[in-house]
Image (cartoon, rainbow, N blue to C red; front, top):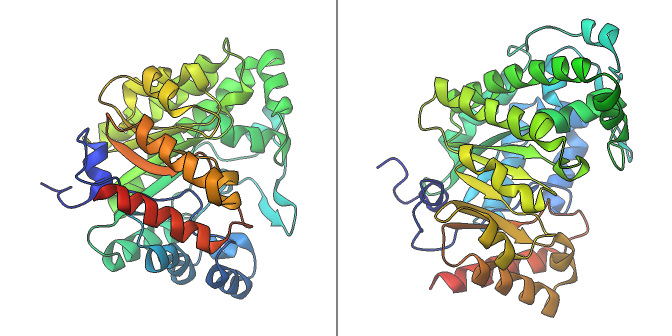
Length: 344
């Protein structure tokens, strides 16, 4: 069996692993001094994403330090619009910036299909990681969900409530649909190539599901993510797909029909989320990243809640969103220790 001995893949196959696997979103990042050293050496953030030597190194750093059960490719969701020809850069201390695409003329200025050649360094990183990772560690690829990526493409930056794309979805739904369709096809090609390069499972990040009112969630989030999952599986039958729809809340089950696991965010109570997700489906999560920063009783209580709340189904321990730069390394060490103690 291909997933034998790989706890994450066992969970994604719908089996309860012999032990609870653990990895953390953004586990390669600014909370690690070794990452900060490489980041300084790389120059720009995009240069780091497109440098297979350095991207491989920072992906491996948290595996060496903590022994996580999965390594997630070091890259960024915005390499996809970059590969469509949109100008993307990262302003130091401010985050991503893009030349906004807010109308049909803007859409005409980018390519109709994704340029996978531009993303070849990402695929080379995956090939190297597959060779260098310890065998029990699962290699994860990823992409952003179309609504999340489109929100950056339209606004030209991150916005607090994704108002620019939400407003366009009301005023010009045909334009938004055309942009989403382009991202769906590009994401299918991108994830498929990641799998061919060595990714053993992939995660789709719908970071802004909570920004959509319930009436808009199916059209702009659920259906595009479903189309990506189905498109990837047409090319790679049996592909394992995790869907992380932050803020979906009670609508989380809408994503269940095409996911091998659902990521649970920190705002969800584990016991309540367990009742929403269909029986037997794997879940991933959901310690509050701020509880990890706080440590002590807050962290211990959150760990217990997740381990207990999801004990009746396949569970991959993770945070309810990405780890933050100010997180103490000692707290991560304690988290890993606690999850491993629960394995015994």
